[in-house]
Image (cartoon, rainbow, N blue to C red; front, side, top):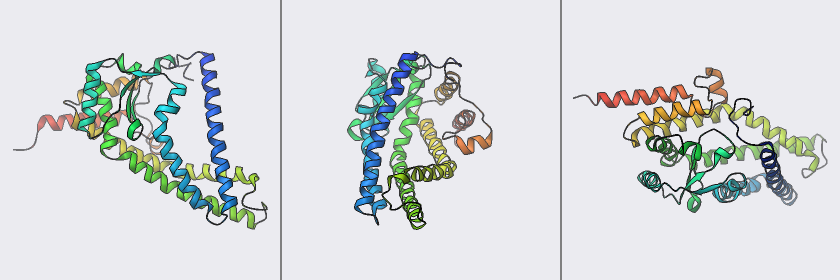
Length: 294
């Protein structure tokens, strides 16, 4: 699809290699997860779901910390940003937000895509800013600052911590529901015991249905967080004009739908529509130009 719309720059061989790496990484992680799951069911049939939930949350946090230095480099190339002036501006922006950035990296996204992106990734000692070369090569420093200010807004509002807590609650609900479904299946003689590996598809279906049911609520929560991060960006930069221009350029470059149908946005979008984000920035700019009443 991205080749059809001229977004992808990746050759077939490179794409196949990425698919193979993704499959192998997923296979290793899925094997660890499934083996751990059924090991705990065998060891503690009554409390497996609670113990496994705690272990899974530990793994989730560990992966969030290791992803920038272990997982991302499997698929993309990174190098320290060589623009010292921009690096200093971004680090200072991070310091004003109260976060210590361990490094600023050029993300060689152009080898695979024409899209532009940026992120604040990692936890603790692995926290770093990654900027796609497609962003660095086509956006003014003020626009890049505006994009990063939004990402830093997530840190200021503790969205990462809050998201981990939300994920912990959902995962706990998921394991409780899985335990209920397995006991129901065993009680009705669908399986001989809880640790019967044949019930794995049932667990997968349960997890999928729960995810589908919760998706609209989780997307609404995500959009709320994104609006907070946008507001922080408005407050952190000298003018909202670079934010507006960066949003419009990103929408055009990434072929984003500026104004999706309301029901599609409510159900499926984790970010507010570009048109709404731009309108909010313009409203903020007008309010700032008018100033407080005398």
